[in-house]
Each structure stands twice: as C-alpha cells, then as structure tokens.
Length: 276
Image (cartoon, rainbow, N blue to C red; front, side, top):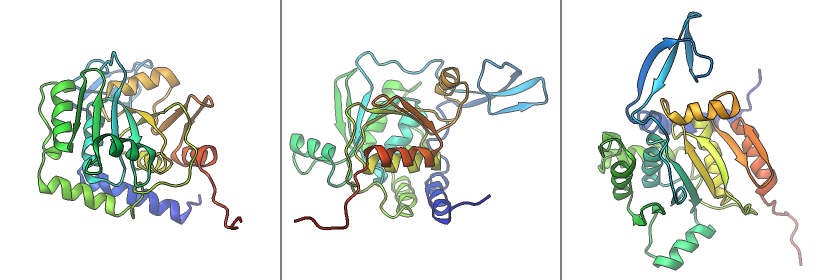
C-alpha cells in the first residue's frame, strides 16, 4: 500500500515524544496485566489461544466523577510544561476540557486579560474543588493528590531538568506545531476526544485542535484505564483517537479522517488574492 511521505514523517516525529519520555502518559496509574477466560463483553488488546485473553487493569475501579463538570486546562501542544500536565491527566484517566492557548488564541487572550500579561501556561481550573493554579509542577501534584490513588507523583513527572528537557526535545521535532493559531471558526460546543498522550496519532489530532482553537473534552484512555472498557461498551470497539462532535452529530475514528474533518468544518481558508 502507499503511504504519503509527509504523513509518514508526521507520524514518525509525533512518535518521538513517546520515545524520549519513555512512554510517560501511556499507562494508567497502577497498570497491571491479568490472564482471564475469554469474555466478549470485556475489552482486550490480545487473546491467548481460544480460551484466554489478556486483561489490563489500573488502580481505579471506576472513572473519577465530576459533580460540577470536568477540570478545565488552558495549555498548548508545543509547551514542554504543558506536555507534562497532559501526561498526568492521561495517567489518571481524567476527563479534562482543554482550551488551547497557542500564540494569538482567544483562550490565551482570556487568561492574559484576567491575570495580566505575565500569566503563564498551563493554567488549571477545577470547578469541583474551586482550585485554580498556574505552574505545571503544582498542577501535577494537585491532580495526583486529589484524583490519584495515594498522591504519589511518578518519577517521570517530577520537577527536574531531565523531565523538562525530554519533554521539550520531543516537541522540538514537530517544528512548532501547536504553537500558533490558524484561521478558524471554532464551534460553540466543545468536542469530545477519546485519546491518550502516548499515541502519535492522537498527538496529530491534538495539534490540529490546538491550532484551530477548538475547545474539547478529552477522555484519557491510557493502557489499563477503565475508560477503555467504557468506550468499548459505547462503540463496540476500542480505538484512539476517536472524535465526537455534538455540533454536527459526527463521530470519527482514524487521525487522518479526523484532521480532514476538522480542517473542512472549522478551518478558514485564506484567499491568495488580495481584496480591496
């Protein structure tokens, strides 16, 4: 089969953060493997003979519930500090509303107007506790203390220069994707993206959402997450990225199809012909 060379390069460079970060964000907290009898009602990534399948579990028996809505995170794809926070919400299988803040975005302007030009990203609001905070390390500690099993932050997310450098180097290969806006007409309602930080295909979709300034609720689906079973029961299979658009009723698998859809629906083409 034929693979577009540009597409192949995109996938390869989008995979580099996973490698440099040693898979951080790809596995749910307390990830475990179990061998169980075949059960067609349960999601599995592999079977062993015709009698057994591999079951992945995590420290949480059920997804965290939010009485007042999902956590809101202002961030952008090209930021290494934001990358670490994205890994943490993935590990914890959280539902988070992302409001992309690349250069020139409406959400960046919103935070700068509220807190002043010195405001940095990421910035988090948790409507369930009333907590608001800047600084990636503080946000990560808060998330694990509030929604983790015992509050322990993984070593890959600790506040040290090695973790920051590996997060930055992985993003550097993407040549600034997710750092600046493109002309767009964002929808009124946030989209829903079933995703995981370790997937290069999901990263390509996240970059598109970021540059088009599209707010979206991400449902974290790392390996072992209970969210995988939830999606399996909802759609009959598990595959990420998976996008749901309440504005049009569309639902799509496959990163290339999702990116094409987002560009056609919400991207605004700039005419090369100048108008008087």
